[in-house]
Length: 443
Image 1 (cartoon, rainbow, N blue to C red):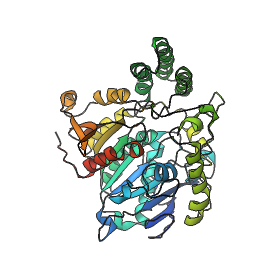
Image 2 (tube, one colour):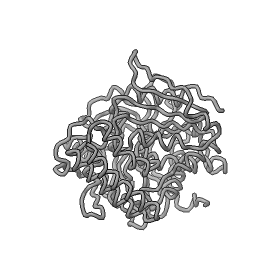
Image 3 (cartoon, rainbow, N blue to C red):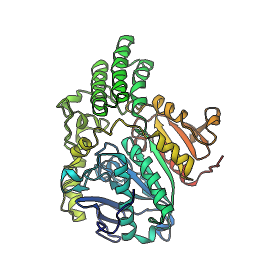
Image 4 (cartoon, rainbow, N blue to C red):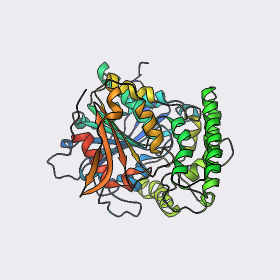
């Protein structure tokens, strides 16, 4: 599919302004299609360098689909300030430039003129992102020669895999002049059915359910898979919701994003960030998307984005008001895997593919992630399972484990749930450094 680049290409450009927060910043919108506008927010590194372009550029993409990188990723996980506007000692800006993108259209500050302009599948998201990058580099051309990496979380991983492939194709076709060297797929929704089918065994193994509960979960998970196998993808998404609700009931509201987090009444939570109603007519997605955040933090981010940040950046759009529509538009695509896309990345590109997973995550549990990774077909994949595993050692503490073969790496992260950057920043720093500056050997 050829991209129409020049017809709809409009970028709002800003240069090294203060914006909101302590860093030098640049931000703007790119019209990626008629009626479809994407927002980007670049924050320059605070590293001691003569020019910020000396440090790699890391793009961060959030989950959902419909959750905001500029909001959640920035203030809850890895930006220079937390939701209380206190400095974050472990911000990624200490070492790298970070580009937060509200992706896809309709997320965060990105907005569509009508619901018809929202994306309905992963390929459309990837095509839009190529145009977004063209607009971004037109606005900030000095970063064109700076090494580029994309890191992400959850559904952001599903998007990132295809984005990386389409970006690589655009580079080879000469329509995009950048250096995409690696991607980090954090707790990523790459093979949804594998995640759902391993929820029951995982919960049973940690004692969160008994045999009876396990059997109920498996029955619901198998129904989810059956609907997918029959090609009824919307029903499969419905049953995914139903299975999660069953788990909440059987476990007295276990936290899907970190099983050790104390959780009270899930249905009593207030989440204004995303107004999502499933086929069951419940605000389930909004209730569960960020259970690791307290209501107070969630509300603070909402206020920050729609008042202080919006005002400081001079924006005339509301943050997050179309996020529910984003999920609804992608509802049928939600349960579809992108494992073949990951294989294509490994087999046709030189891009480093780093998969990392928090051991305490349930929504994208480590057993399910290991299952699809172990089944990947790529040059040397027959050696993958027997590849030596090493410790992620930080200050004499094992923060996790990893193994690498060719351009594929897998990182097990200890003491972390779904949100690795905030749950275990030491392990996350190791992974970042290894992907960007570590030794990789093509088999």
